Length: 160
Length: 183
Image (cartoon, rainbow over all chains, first blue to last red):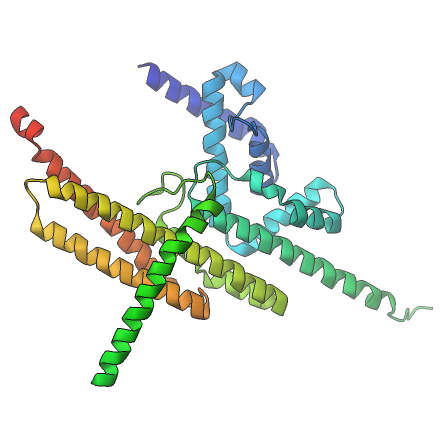
């Protein structure tokens, strides 16, 4: 009986999280980073003040954990092109200069902490590998854009 | 005829060597995987093996990279996908071997072995191990592209073994002394 009550609470917490918090975040990649940030680095346990107050600590924890896994699976299922657009949206959202962002992410690999615990190891490998590729693709596009800019400025201005 | 036999023997030898090497490199993979556990036969914490294979061996991703017209990106892509594909094959191979070992140990104590199911299981296992060997060889030689069908078949076999094992488990449970006494 108490198990079924807990299940209902977890489900409510899950729906609440989707409706109130995650729907305001523009892309799955940003949602993944947000959910990973609700997890304690030392214990691996999730915590969300509002959800815990409304549905209980354990229920909130389970809702956060399952949503984190779900979004992670969605991102792994994306074609590489889709992941590049997700990352691009995330870079835009961060308001950082793209060059600096890409450099920091390639050096520090902060996306590693965005991986949920106890998920399939091959999925983790694929995700990390795809992020490395997506960063390289963004860098390539950046370089291409920069290479195009001086050429464009050398165009003769016909009106003068 | 002799040449044909020699070729078959050479292929079998190469595949055996690769499978042995796979065993050594598995520990490396496990270290890389860290705390992330692998799930068996199901999507409890992720995608089905066949779905995962279709992502790793995807042609669509390759076409996307080719559109960039950058040899650096193409090289990086090939290198990255090769690593992930090899990890996937080694994991499948390792898990199936371990599961079959456990099954063999349990079967020795079982009083009512179903020979047909056991034979089916054994041939599925042989086919899977052969495919894993082939995949390891081909991925290392040419990369994971154009191997989607082979990889999908491997993922399918992996799930078939899972289903066959649960059938065996169900038969053993039905015929277990406790159940007989209860009926």
